[in-house]
Image (cartoon, rainbow, N blue to C red; front, side, top):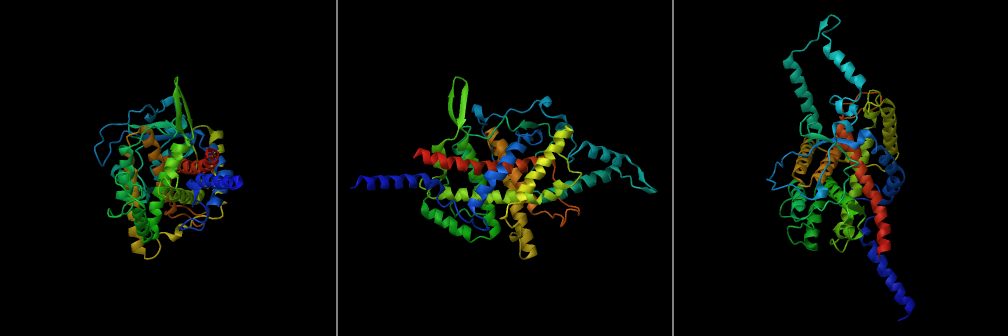
Length: 450
């Protein structure tokens, strides 16, 4: 055979091998009018750099979390004993005083001061507006109930003694060695019990049973037969799973010698999770679901813009100049998000018959809240930290998307966001944005690797 022909065949084989992870990860996404290429350009060139800067600020790097909650679903034998599973909490003096001392759901010292004045006032004009202790407590409970009714996830009690601040920059999400049956059990519980799937339909690549392409075809036939809301729910969870796997592959422990660890991208690990042939065609589908998740969280950022634009909204850390700069950065990020021309249309969800839509919305909300509880069963503390943060961020995004927002910037909004929700939301979209940026890097590495 002609040497030139042989060389051409070998070149084509190499090209096919390097593209297997990204085959079918292009073009228009299902259930929305947007394409992967537009998302790549928008995220990598515009959104990611601004998110990266914002997430390095004090307001967004300190996250309060309770990592000591017991698993509510099964008895956990032990916690991960691997060194890299550990999370280092902050000492009190490491967290800005304004973050440590701010009142619940308040954004500024001025707002807290004004609130105290209002609460201490016994009368307004000639009208006695004082409240009994019983009435005040009832009002607190009503407010808490109304807010909880909007939430798609459970938030840790910020005042719980077990809740501690964590510096996310010092505890990055990366591969810890936590894997095997314990990790599989978490994802199996999420998919099998909370994604509206009957047990008779087998999820592709479930590690607890042997599955082939016939089971995968049956699964996707079942999925396509579901309503758009249930399909979207599964794709969000699958996209979150894909994003986490990208992070673990991109920040992998490459060497551990002489007390020095070297972290970086592991191409073999990435291929094992996303190569089309190694995953029976499942890997590229999961990557496409990552892009769907990006659209959902991006749309939530846009819908939060009227709330953030309010003059009373503050990112309070006790450093006035930095706080003003951070709000300007956040507004710039939200305006950039709004400039994306191909947003997901959330009005396509929970439409139709009002009573059926309300029932479906509540089913989805409760299923997602259940997933947020499963995060307390993760035995690796670092994995638990980032799992809780990202599920809370996605839950906040869903709350924003399906809460009533003002029709104009001048009208009032029924939506409220406390600091924990806002930090989780921005960090969650930051994780998804980073995943898409990492895909660009892995494309180049795969081409070099072949």
